[in-house]
Image: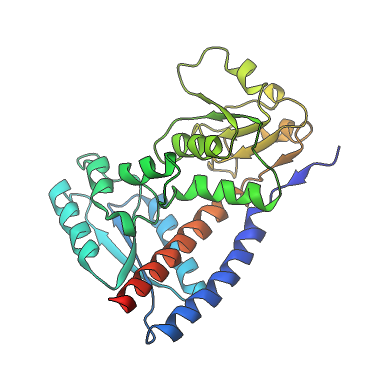
Length: 286
């Protein structure tokens, strides 16, 4: 059996080339206006700083303006809410990203939900999640939406398949489960209290590893011919799935790195441009 590599890096590069053309079109049609993605980094988490830098680099590659807002480790919930309100009211800003995680004294959920729906390009608000789950227009959480885009590109149709999602976080496990359900998969969500995890994983036609623990999901659990999506990333370039063993059994898989990660950033940038096109057109009509 030939195993298909789901190359997120290559697809993300292709998407960026297409997005650069769209940004140039926006600038031509709307008096040179450049769409803006505002990224908020609270505190001094080094991994978060790297992720924000990567997103800023992606903005520049396609011609977006990246506005980086850096706040102190001691920032309060009220202070962060005020910053978000300012960005919500700024007509030049089309997308707002609040980098996760924030310092523990901040009510992260309240701050996520303060982001205006039209600018929630990272798909983190409760309202956005609810609309997405009900198949209504909304920006999907960037990593799950990137996974779905990758599956579509490689013609891996979830329709009628049994998808197993290991993990239930509000920005990854839960939204990817709803997206797969909306794509007509039968979905099982597993978590820390799940009994018989190995057996359930072995039933998956599509397996999504989103548990946040390195190589927690063993390759021996995976059935022959499964599509394996590893959404984890840990030091040393390993994911949530024991991929060395899984590769010998699955029909397709996402490499770590180079699979899901690049698609997350490409999706974030694409949804920012979607937002800009909608907002600019709305301004032109008013």
